[in-house]
Image 1 (tube, rainbow, N blue to C red):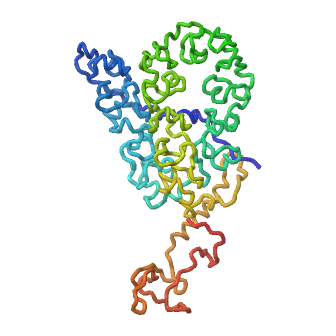
Image 2: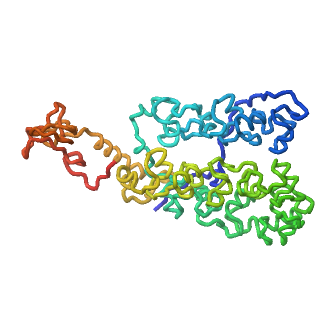
Image 3: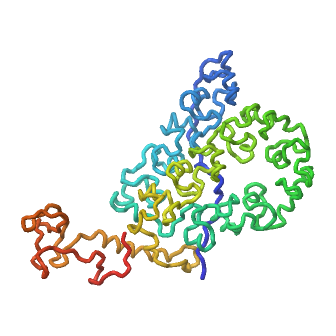
Length: 514
């Protein structure tokens, strides 16, 4: 039996959140005050204040985002060292002066699309429903696959419901593999990087590496390090070669750059060879990078370059040393590098990724998950088959209750006991389409007007109906307001048809309620 084809290779990984492509909108010119002795660049911050913050006292707009440093510190409260504070793909100045979006909120209108993506799609990042069709732009793009710029697609807001737009074979953790494919490959459907090597499961399947083994070729370098850092082949045990001293640099590379392959710190300056190699300092010069006054693994001259405090080992107070932040890719000047509501140190403590705002790929930020009590490392906290993001953002159900949504809508009911089926060779699991006619029939049955089983009249329930002079609740009455049925051989009252009676008058076996 053939299995469904994996998705094509992705360029992004679970440990790195790539913002949308930057917009082509021109950064607005900055307006400054006349320079003074205390404020050389006229940006509203004294030179002493800039030294403390790490901004350039001779450049009024250090990060080049169109906002002067003083305005960022005192007005917008954005980072004057980060041109895109919320990582939404739009520079802070453009958000303030052009798009009207919030430079501190990557999704200003809360529709499920970040502002930069909305600009690229030409939807309105300040209006959650650009075309006014009753569906948020994010739902149209990510769920219904309809055009968020066309109010006729879908045909009106009543043409679909949140319970029928969920995929039958979902990708709960956003790693590029559907739930059935994760079962085929033995990966965790609630963890986008099952083996924790820095490559998403779908990416590994497409590359041919083992998503359940962090070091597929057994050469001592993880698949993620080989692909993302060393540029070597994660399927070739001889590439990049042996690393005798275990410093992260293969012996061949150490011989090429002149370091000792049997000494992890060739120049004995307390900075490992790989650390120096990655940062661009000389691993053969004990005076480069130089003195580290606060013992934070970042030399004083490097701290001046990064804007951190050479006398404070944790400049941003997030619980991580400045040097460790530089090494792992977090911002030593921002306690919450990925803007998910959790400090970088807290993320390492709980096992989430401080550079990825949604570690489990379920559509909820890590900080939001902690607030709600869901697990930011498990895409489906209550194991009910719906990701936490689906339950919160689409179904409105409780992601902590495995019985909610319960039998009202289940993927298992729609899919039955079908396992992975053979495809047609093109990689698309066409067997999924078999569930669509069933779904249509269930919706038709669910929406049919209730009728009396005897007289076939349309009926509804009403309270306070007088029967023999006594008001009673929940009585079935027809459109004439009468509760009596002349065709009922057992009494006078209207009675419902069996709820799940199907076409041709035959009862439906094992019907799934929707």
